[in-house]
Image (tube, rainbow, N blue to C red; front, top):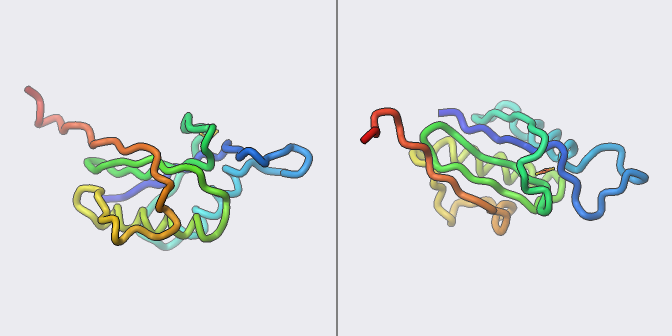
Length: 126
Ligand code: FES
């Protein structure tokens, strides 16, 4: 089951300024995550706004039939991008999307914002 990392490419952290930044923080983060995800067992996509603008940079980790998560408050940096991709690979390897806390990369700790249970399958109709 493929795990997707959805990266908000329009996030701007508090220190963003059009005079000093050519690109949004989200664009910088997307580029870093995409580079780290290359050749790994996850896929990436970009969206403009995950509605968590006050605590960017934001990403979502999702797969069909599994717990889904939004993570935020990342600065666009190599360590953060690597941790996000490492976590997403563990999500991909897990049956339910639940990755034991002891296995979380240090770089994602403290960055979880929301968790969404998977939707019921069509077979689960009442
Ligand atoms: S701009 Fe990134 S969540 Fe809204």
